[in-house]
Length: 327
Image 1 (tube, rainbow, N blue to C red):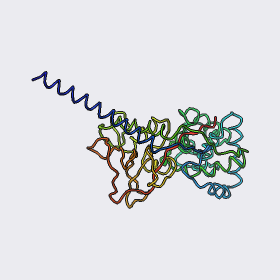
Image 2 (image 1 turned 180 degrees about the vertical axis):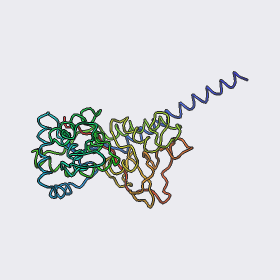
Image 3 (image 1 turned 90 degrees about the vertical axis):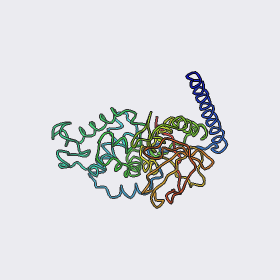
Image 4 (image 1 turned 90 degrees about the horizontal axis):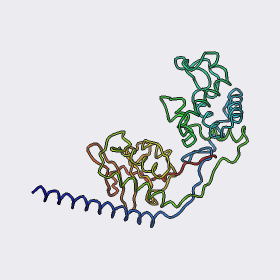
């Protein structure tokens, strides 16, 4: 009896392997047939996810003389340190959110200055010295692992560690505009000739397929458990593309917006109350033929499923884009 059970298990394992291999083959063919090839123009400095470029000029028009002077110092010191314009942009966005680029003598608890630096980092005299503050910011930024590949606002958060991490993104367009006007960097977009979309999408889908059957755990991002956005983030990470962790952030900051009826394999599909992006609470990876791979809910596992509506399907998909380096 024991031998018979072992033989049966072996057959089941082999059959499961054949099924997974077959699924992978079908998905690869599906992606290749539907995805095609396309180029990508990304932000060399970074107005990510369709930010309004004209907003930057309007925001900059409201800055005080002090703020413009400080911005000039941020750019000058960045150049002196041979840091890329991406670093200047990160510092400008951080300073704008923390102080409106002013050298404040007050703040939350013992925070002061442009970047609202806490007392643990230096004396009050130091923390009100503009050159010291900018040096501190750049020193701290350079200790952040892979800061060059992050969205600028996320890199600013890695330095500042704010309780409101998404606030820094608000100032992307303004920082780009100021770097153009004050830093003399007028080529702020980078267009890359990329591998065919199907190659990157296939890598993302292949990763997701390999996770089928793993348990859903809220907040998890692998390797053994996932929630919905943890799965999509890791899938695209496997394709060499960094997107944010949370489903709403993936919608607003994860890539190019695409009408849902034009979605291609590898795109992200979303659900939210009233079909509104502001209410997004679920994301899945589209694999073609009206199917997705997703991590559904607590007590469930990563699975392949037909797209459903439920009164929550958002009419726009997101096509993740690659990180674009300035160097």
